Image 1 (cartoon, rainbow, N blue to C red):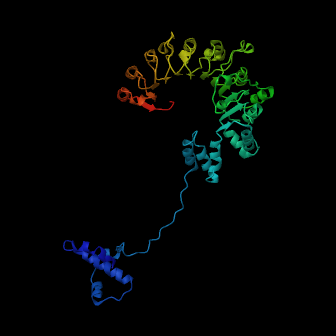
Image 2 (image 1 turned 90 degrees about the vertical axis):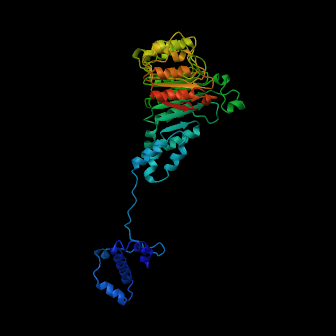
Image 3 (image 1 turned 45 degrees about the vertical axis):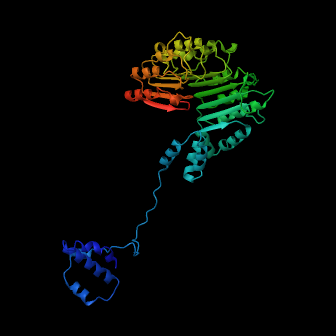
Amino acid sequence: MPVFDFFPELTGTAAANPWILAVALAACHYNSSSRQKPASTSSRKLTDAPMHALARDFIPYSSPRSPSAPSPRSSKPPVDMPLELVLAIIEAADGPESIALLKACSLVCRAWSVPVQKLLFRSVTLRTDSAYTSFKAAVGAGTPHSRVLGAAIRHLRVVVDYSQPSYLHQRAFAHAVTMCPNLQELDVALYGFADSFSGAEALGTVDSSRLRRRAPSFDDETLEMLRSGPSIKSLSFSNWSENQECVFQLLDLWPSLRSLSMSGTCPHLLPSSSSTPFPGSLESLRVNFQAPPSIEFMSWLLHQSQTTGSLRSLTFDRDPCPDLFDHFLDAFGPSLQSLSTPNFPCNTTRTIESCCENLETLRMDRPQLNPLAFKSVPKNIKHLVIGIDRDTPLQPVIDVVKGRPTLEEVTVRLWNGGEGHRLLPALKIACAYRGVDLKVTKDAA
């Protein structure tokens, strides 16, 4: 009988609570009557006695040892997560290494397919003619779905390498640009013909001979197609050939550029361009030339930017020469808000504090810095990025943390042995005391 499973608990308190025994007996009577067993004489006498009202609503206890029938439950349909929330989660996980994730998500169901494909096509890279053929079949088919994918592209990277057997032709590159009506960022890498192709170069080694490779300029049909395409806001051009005209051709196409990145062969100012400066007002500039650019070329490029005071961010991936660094500080120091350089030039006659009064972000991630660099940190600095190894003098950095009231964040990039620097705990304490956010990383900040 199920009631016997808890009956020992009732007997201990029956004297103090007489009604408990009555409840138990009532349960026994209820259980026996439900099984339709003939009642004994004693049980019939109990039914004639008045029972507590609780006996009418009592539900017998079901012992784990005696199976009972499951109570019926109403089955509710599953609640679908809103598609907007699902896409927000997928987009948050989107990154350079998430191509496989996006491909898998696009195959989950029909509702996910098109939105995830739009994320997949947000950034596209074309290196060969076969890649362009596949891209054209997906985006240029003229169907509503292909137009949706073409409108989703925001960043396009193309590699025109004339040394490859199936290289991307310059007209195919131009046609790919025209199929992206909402394109905002364009990344172009140009490689010249290889007269002698060695094994080291096949692995991607860039040497001085690669920079002397010949490459044709863009023809008129290519330029006309690019001009009819979208208005680019950000251009990154890597020139690994001896051609000096291509960069001027691309700059002439998009005077509305706001961000420009140039690397590889340093361009020289052409006679045809010396009289008319670049009309664009740049807000961000990054230079990574194999040789320092001339002040004449930089003056031609940034003439309008200096006139309007539009330049906000300046990045040197290589140590700038002192004359060029002084030129930039004199011409653009008051408008700069972000400055990145591997090291502070030793022979410069300018200081960042006196020239860049509005500077908010300063990055100098070379571990062996010029001691004068920290003395010239502006008082209004908000974000400082530095690199340290086991021998980097950190006391000037600690003094900057203590003496700059507007400082909000310090990013430390660890080089060889930097994690064991003896003053790194002191820097952490100084940042914690001032409420400055300290980030330590071994990657590029």
